[in-house]
Image 1 (tube, helix red, strand yellow):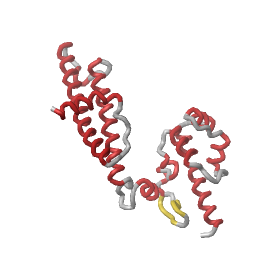
Image 2: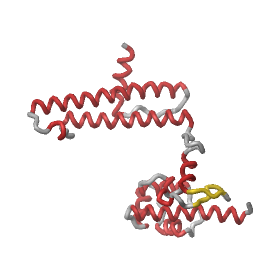
Image 3: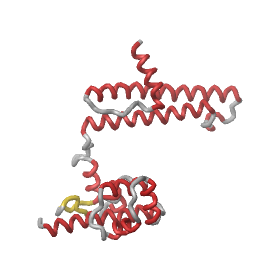
Image 4: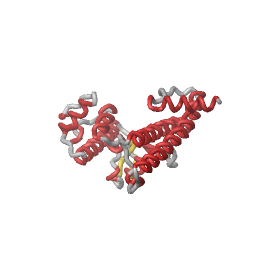
Length: 221
């Protein structure tokens, strides 16, 4: 493939991204200036004129930084701006000279050709750990909300007297706490596995530090 053909392919990719950014922006009911302001607030200024040039295809390249920040402001995954899901039947060229449906190109972009995660086993373990901890944090917030009375349980509490409502709330909060401990125990095991594989992990989330300490203490008994 010659230089001209390669340049035309590169421009077509940028043009498609620009079109997808415009679609996502309009779905979010944002003007180009709103998007520019959001990028500035996110810490990476992209002038309105640059956004207009990207969307019109006049800008022949879109940097990774621009793609990531614009996707963040629009609240969509960057992949959506590369291969727009609402144009699943569109024929695109993920690499020069290779035609493919957008839906297939998007799948191959995120996964292997066999539909399996391209991250590998180690990457999947890291993401699973993150998911466990995020889920535990959510459950902990639910438990604390029930205990404090900030989160009601209308379906379970309707028609009960005060004493019965308090008892149901206590039982519900206790159940959430047990779920948090179960997840924390599994997360602690996963953390130990990843550390042995020399993965540089984040600190245990502040919200879970006390639970992790309890789980470790229980394991030492």
